[in-house]
Image (cartoon, rainbow, N blue to C red; front, side, top):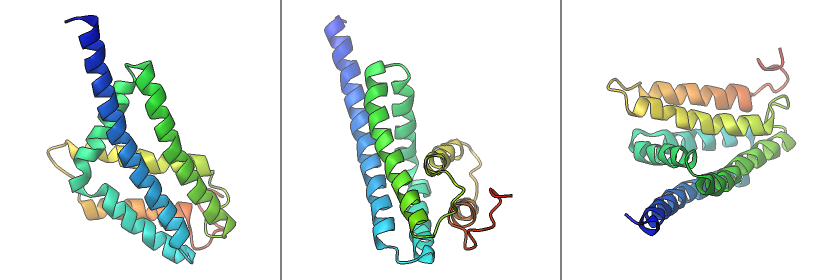
Amino acid sequence: KTAYEIVSRDWSSDVCSSDLFGRYVDRSVELCEYAISNAKSRDELVSILKNVTRETQKPEQAEIRYARVRAIAMASQSERMKLKLGKVQEHLTEALEDLFREAKERGWADESVDARSAAVLVQAYTFGHVVDDFTPEHMNIEAWYRVVDGVVENVFFPADRKSTRLNS
């Protein structure tokens, strides 16, 4: 193969992966914006985020999770791809940070939780689900939802924002 064919193939692969990655990120950003724009209370925000968890974490989304992992793995081999995906990923991180900051301003979030760290953790548990996606014995999805809901409800947005485990 010529250098042109190799570069063209690599570029096409980069573009496809980054476009799919970008569409997923755009949808995730829309969900964040919807959650914070439509919630009228801490309980409503938690309820909306529980629904978002069920949508993004459901077993039928495994291929999307795989695609994100593949794109990130490809980025480790291509500086161009790393820069491109890094910007897209930063967009999602910033949207999640905005959600946490807005929730703090409304008095719904734990003040001691750093918004960027929480934003990264939300993304990490989505990637973590990939571990279960390819194992022969899958976890109980309802149990997974309860764990994620527990983090959302008791760490990020506890009913009693003065006494969380992070403050002790």
